[in-house]
Image 1: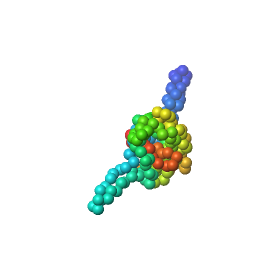
Image 2: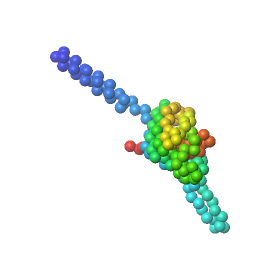
Image 3: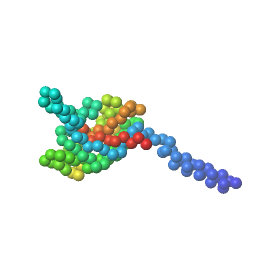
Image 4: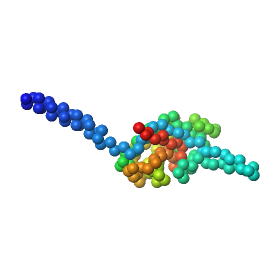
Length: 167
């Protein structure tokens, strides 16, 4: 009887130990996949023959001046503002330096509505890979309404955006 009770309590403790991380999920938002920037969203020929070029501005954030591509992006933001981003292949997608990283440094910006929450800057590897493991400032609200994740340069232009993971 004592042995059966000991085994039962041990099993409950072990199951409880492994269940804690499931119960304590503090994930605010996740992003899986990325979209590289195309700086111009459209070009309009006006009735007078003039041309209007509309830049690909996201919630007030200007795009980079050249096309950028990204092969992979995974990001997770916790409710306390901790952010982990793994990016692969963030490189120029046009111009004379196509396929290069332009010696850029990047940061992650989480937009909750129009409020910006930034990480520190990290350098791009020659192949465009980068990793951000930081805390956003200021800390984002919980919930983060209509979240957008942008990868930006020191001047603030965006190079890539995360695709929200909704499941």
